[in-house]
Amino acid sequence: MITIHFNGQQQQLPQPVDLQQLLEQSGVQTRFCALELNGQLVPREQWSSTLLADGDRLEVVTLVGGG
Image (cartoon, rainbow, N blue to C red):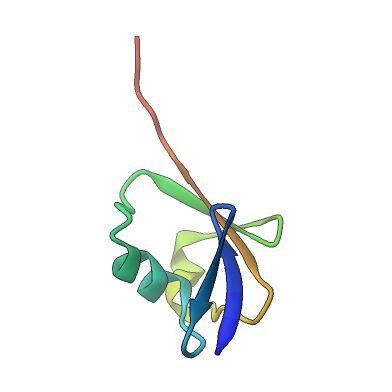
């Protein structure tokens, strides 16, 4: 079991998952978002190859339109 912080909320995961899997499991719309892992932006091409580890901090930033 690992513990991560996902958008400021502590979350327990039964096993390490990659960023893409976590987003899919969480229902996050990925079309207009960026990911920051431990203070560093993660390029979209690396989401499926970046495994989360105990203590990681993940923030999802989404585009908000307006006028």
